[in-house]
Length: 459
Ligand code: ARG
Image (cartoon, rainbow, N blue to C red; front, side, top):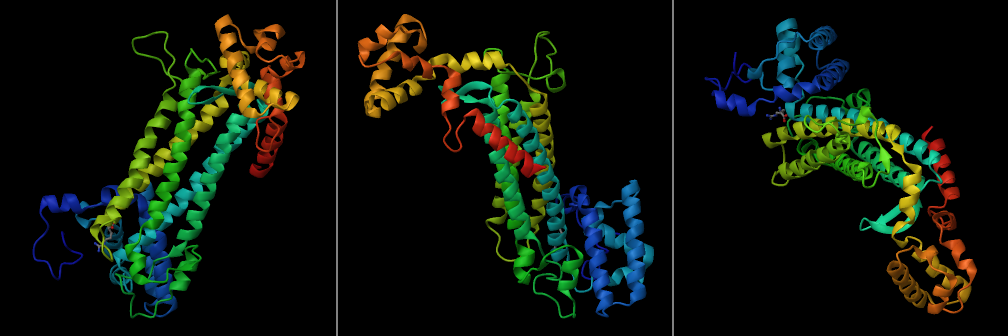
């Protein structure tokens, strides 16, 4: 049965290793729905323009419906000797309906067929992932509204910097994810052209109607150059970049969950539903879901690099190298799906320890900038001088073993005699965040407004 597809030219079957390295049916069977949808559109078009008889088209339609039913039921006899999803389906179709099945491949090649199938698959994946990204955004927005005024430490270099609100922190991820979402939408719009009918590489002499098949398959139109149609996978690379960037954002959040759940921080707790224990240490509560989101980002980023590397040395047009596009795409999409679901789950699950967050927010002289700003505002001191004076006050507090508010007015005046009692009003973490009212700043009122805006946009 081997080489039944190109039996005319070939006397012998492939060696076992040839078959093993060549066959893609083990993974590209995932494309069966797309392959059948493409064949249905192609056959309908062939009949419409008179290339095949309408009885043949009807037989093809029924045959493909039966194949779909069998695949769905899990009793389709996959054959590695038939290499890939395209030939498995075509061979089975011909076996079932005879002559008409052999006419299906008129004016078409596996080169445009596979380019089509992968596009259709990626388009569906984009739609599914986009909905999931929105779900994570909704989860973050809900928690942000709840914690619009919950004060926590803001870090740079993971060192205490300035107090922020937890709501503001969570909305930062909403902004990142909204860009991921818009990148997915851009990629979808750019890739939404049908390569079907480019045939092997040069187009075809049959009077096919590529606009018709493009429309039937939900594309904006046909691709404009047959060589480009079968040679290009930039849509796949772009999709993988979208996945990699989104995973990278989720990974940064996951890293924060790992830090926040560490008992030395104790910023948030995850419930039993999102933690695991240890086989030896009975006390353990590990944030494995967060660690796996962070870890899986490695393979997703790897898929992007893999795809680009497959493409970089290819002359036009199709090479079998391109068969290597699929596993990375499938794997990235599947794992990003898991990462998004796990992140949404953790966001909804986590319990912030408000008292601990607030206490931590005040540590490390985090309102030193507020003190310097007071000197600028009230004493008209140049900021650079205020920075200096404040630095000396921090050193003084550190030596005394207290925070800035623990210094007496006299101790402050020893550094700068014009300092008045009012300065203590800006040293609390609440006053600090409330003062950050600049557009995009962390003030609770800002956060409430932004969260409400997001809630409506995502409704
Ligand atoms: N299985 C192949 C792939 O995934 C389908 C296209 C094969 N085309 C060819 N000329 N060998 O790329």
